[in-house]
Image (tube, rainbow, N blue to C red):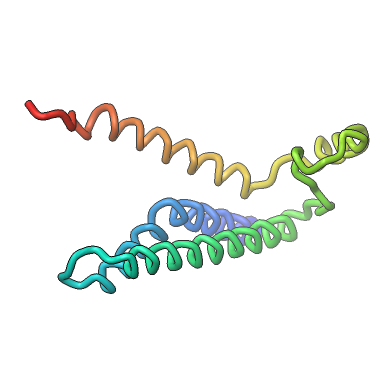
Length: 136
């Protein structure tokens, strides 16, 4: 059981990272195949946007399924959970009790870590590695 949970967590982390890196790079590659050696066209831009949208949707769907699989493997109770901004103000009392009882998911934790790593990597690149765009 522990090995299965670790494999599902690793797959979740890989997909969460690829949503920021692999999907955009693959979409740009497909767009570059459409352009060839000519100038950039709106067709190529449209292809990049469509491919990126399809990939992100597919990865998000896979992440949702992996999260459900992890919950089943860990024996975690799965209940209806509504996002805070979708709740009615009248629901606050008993919904908060359910949220405290269920807590955050592994998917949420992994995605938050990848977002923080992406933001920190961008800031390091922007302030340290990129250099000044201004002419010398």
